[in-house]
Every structure is written in C-alpha cells, then in structure tokens.
Length: 626
Image 1 (cartoon, rainbow, N blue to C red):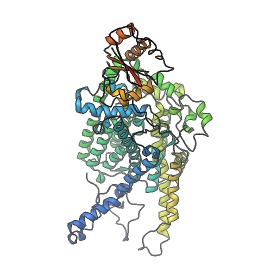
Image 2 (image 1 turned 180 degrees about the horizontal axis):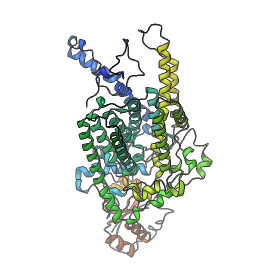
Image 3 (image 1 turned 180 degrees about the vertical axis):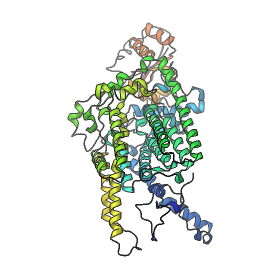
Image 4 (image 1 turned 45 degrees about the vertical axis):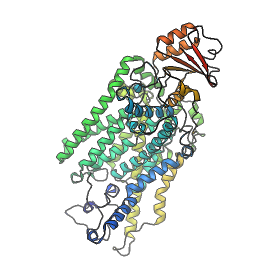
C-alpha cells in the first residue's frame, strides 16, 4: 500500500514555503508519517548508484529494524510477555486466569482447525454437545483464530496455541492503540501512554480468562488504518492529498477479521463503524470536500465485504436462537451484569495495586468480575486534564467528552436512568443484533479508548511546549533542536504509572492432565461427573482425537444435555441405561477421583441391572459400555 513521500513530511501551507532550516519542526511533522512511512522513503537517491546490492540490502534491513513501527511492534510484544510472565514459565501446561473459559477457547480453536482439515462441512457442530447442531455458536465462535488451529494436535498443543494467541492479542492491543493515537496526531509519549493504558487497564485484568474480550486490537488497528487511508487526523482534519486506498482496504480487512472472532465485542464495533460512516456522510453534505474516486470504491467494497461476513456469521446464531428460544433472551442477563456507578471506580481483585483496597466495594457488587470497571486512576486523571489542556481543539474535546458520556451511559446497562430505558436496554430492544451482548460492562472498552485519546492530547501538548521551549533557547537557528533528556523521561512517567496499575495478581493455573484411559474410549460418551468446570477440561482433553462427547460448556447449555445428566443420576439402573441408549450414547465414563460429593456419587455403588452393559475398570476411571 502506498504512503506519502518525504516531501510531504511537514505540514506547511503550500502558499507560504517554510524558511530554510536544517531540520523540520518536529511539532509540525505528521506523527503517523514517521510511524508508517516505508523504509525507502528517506533514502538519499544520490547514494543509490554508489551502493552495491549487499549494501542496499543491509541499509534497508537496518532501516526496517530501526523503524518506528518495528520498534513499536517489538515493544508491544515484549510488554505482553513481561506483563504475563508466569504464563511463559510453562506455556504448555498453564493458562491465564482460570481453567474454565480459557480451556473452552483453546478447545474451540483446536476444533475449528481440525474440522477444517477433516470435515469442513461439519465445522459448525462440535464433537461436544453430542446430538446438538450448530453448537459452535453456543457462544463466541472464535472463527478468526481458525488458521492457528491447523497447527498441532492434542491438549498440550491446544494450550500452547492458546497462550501464543492470547499474548499476541495483548500485543496487538498495545500496537493498535499506539498506531491509532499516532494517526490522530499524538506524540510518541502520548501514544505510548494511551496504548498501554488501553491494553493494561485494571478492568481488563478480570477479563484475562476471556480471549474474545482481550482480542480487541483489531478494532484499534482498523480504525487507525481507516483514518490513515482517509487522510484524517485530529491534528490536521481531512486532507484529500493524503488519502490512500491501500490503507482503507487494509483497515476494512482487519475490521472484517475482528468481527469473525465473535459478536460479543463485534456488534458494538460494527455499529461504531456504521456511525462513523453516517457522521462522515453528514460532514460531506455540509462541506462537500473532494473525495477521490478510488477512496469511495474501496470504502464501498470494504464495507460490503464486512457486512456480508457479519450477516453470514449471524445466520447460525439466529438459527440457534430459533432452535433454543430460552438461549436468545439475554435481557435478564444484561440486567444482572449491569455495573453500578461504583463499579466505574472499583478495581477487580486481580489488581495488584488496588485490588485489596477495593475489597469492600467489590463485596457489595453482583459478579464483580464483570462489574468492576476501573479504567485506571492515572488514565482518568490525565483524561480529565485533557479536557482542559490539550493539543486537540476545544471543539474536538467537546465531541470527545460527548462520546465519553454516551459510552458511559451504555456501559451502565440497566443501571442508568429508568433501568437503562434511554440507553443500553433501548438498543437491546430495538437494534438488530444488540441482544448478542449480555454483558454491558464490556463496553467500557470505548470509555477507555476515548479517555486515552483525551489523555494523549494532554501529554502531546506538553511535548509540543517542550519542543517550543527548546527551539526558543537555540543560540543558532541552524542548530538541531535538543530537548532536555530529563524532560523526555518525564513525559514517559505516566506510562510507568499505568503499567503499575496494570500489574495482575491473577493465577496462572496448571491444567490437569487427562486420565490415561480416556483416550482409549470410543464415543459417543458421557463422562461423569459433569459440570461447567469439569466439562471445560473434558473439551480440552477431547482435542486428542475429538471423540463425540455429551458433555460441553458454553454460554448456554441445551435442555437435552440437562435431561441426559439428570437421567444419569440413577445410572446404572435399567431406566437410565435405556434412556442413554435411545439418545445414542454408547459409553459412560466415571472418574473415581472426582465423583465424591456430586449428584452422581452413587453410580459406582450398585451393579447395572442390564446384563448387556460391560464394565471395565481402568484404574482412575470406570468405563460402562452400553
């Protein structure tokens, strides 16, 4: 994709050429121009003939290594690894946060890769939830991660694959936030602060077990690319000469990939893009700026692809809602998961800095893991300062404040005025697809992003002022501008503060190894005891061959599974055996070490009344062949 030439590096009006200077004023240089320029753009043409091929390759490699986007990408990845370091001490056995949803997600990614190779037409129906169709869509499908599932097999590969993707998702959030803020016009310290504040906000610590919530870097990166492609920034507004259709195409491609991860975070993003399109169209009607034809064509094609993919992926969800009506009503869930006002300034228990101090506040909340939504006090303070002192214009700050207010209202869900009737619940009732989001608090992402933009404006204004002071203090205007090193370091202190607030004390538990005999059992099988935690482990273990399982854990569980589990309470009597046979179950596996204290604790106390049932004791499990 093309980028601007070095001749456009400074934002100087064409009718007033800049006075001779040994270097452009850094406050006037387009930040994204330095960030996204290709490595050859600053090549001295006079040097090309005098260099050999090896020299040119070495020079190009050196520029790539030293380029801002390379440094930003490496820094993002290093931060993601360091901030979750315990995970990487044993990445094939540990998972972040808990052994519930991460195991299900690791399984889903493995399943989509396995089914793509072995049974592409059956990818939507999992090997778990035996007898249920379209079970991939009982929650967020994570289809966007399917290519990773093509690599490796078995539980350990699934865990390692998940941990790599998890870390890359955190890194992409840092990188995407940095790219977005640079495109909007922030200096490096402001962009670094905002990116880290978004990626390591305290509220995200409680979401570490939900990769579909952590994986929002595509939202930020696509917005950066789209803004870049349209030649738009907060600093300079719309500049037709800087439009680039390649960046627009890339932005829509990343946005489309983001929607394939899941609708839990994707629905709001889709409506955000639609809102941006509407606002841009209204702005064009008033100002009638020149828009290149290739921009309109690329936008139309990109938006069409995005819409088609979103619609195609939504069809199975509507089919699931029709087949299981009790799964479609998320209004009650949205009310339960709506955070109180106190939740906006309360940190989750996973926060090293604030967790213990905020325990009394969390004790008064329902499901604090979803309702403690602190964006960080450092971010909050600088965002408030950004409304008063900023490199953004007053009008832009008012619009950002309005967007922030709307985001807060929607995040509150049913706990805003009139039980959310003027906000989230109204959208839940009337906006297509909005009901897919049953956790309003996850919209805190947009509160965090807008606050980061405001905060970056403050830090950027401070950086501009330091630059102006350095320019004024030069004795000879031909001398390069040198800002005091301590001043540069001071601008990075806020980054250290948000990193401190982002330190987590969450566990990185070790995943239990599967019973050795389990891989020898043929499906369809029912494994006892059952339950969300037990079934999450079983789903992961089933990546060793993917035998058919009655067990399964998801956002909701079909009533058929509940009925089979209820019947199994009286197993192995004849009635239970006959019912399970009729449902297609061929094997029941009982785990001796897990059965005590459950509803199925007596299944091993009595012999089966059906003589056709074959029992095999395999040490840690007992296998009943029906």
